[in-house]
Image (cartoon, rainbow, N blue to C red; front, side, top):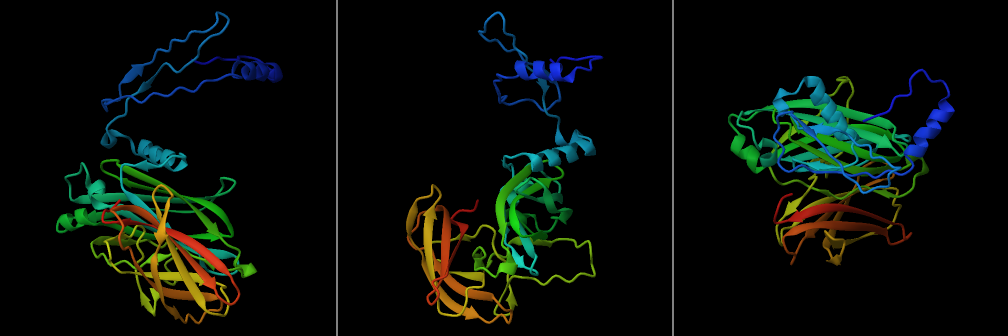
Length: 357
């Protein structure tokens, strides 16, 4: 369905013809219902009521997908690349992502990336207890240029813990190093046996730490669920020591990418902020429904401002109770305000009440 310009050197004329012929283009898409994954070719026919001087060009057909386990490793790699490059999310797997830029130095942020994958969706269609999971995470700047990435294959043996894994899932901890700027984080997780894939994209803003402007990180719900299988990134530089950033009162904790709460359950939240200044800090919270409707003020109590020993860095402990809400997905919007200077910083985090993803 194409056209060849052979042995031609007048590129201006030929490009002009191409531009003229493609000046009016209709993009039509189809979604085949229940295609058999056998790799067969399906011919397409397009009929259009057009003037006699016009013509229709279209692709001749498409190939049905082949079973994932029959694909060549190169084809599997290309599928992962396409999933990362594509602008749309994919949800074969239930994936939640949390990323927050902690200050590493004046020019760069240490960005932990926490990925949670629901166990049932990850095991769907797989009977083998050997579970290989692929992780691909890329950060691109506002110009589409990749700034940092990590990839890893994790293989789990579920022969003695499959039921627990299905009730919980897999939580992965990786990190990126990013300079100041706006980024789009693309995360792809894939079951390497079945090919089931989850793709999530989240925006990330890394501030200019050298400017010492106020900045609040997303609220961190302290994880209380012990059903996760926890995996941490494999460091390519073993001699490098990375300080674990999630601590409160000197104790490490694991934040939840998607907190799942019960009605009237009290949850501990850690708030991390930079350059709020001296003075009393007031916390306000708002609960927002999935459709963007503001429901009510949150039952949010600021419990403690901890001493970090690092200039400009503040950590707070707060308590949150989701009282009187129906089951569903919500967003908790948290604002910290310095009552003396009036400095106000706001960040949000999603949570689910009564039901997981």
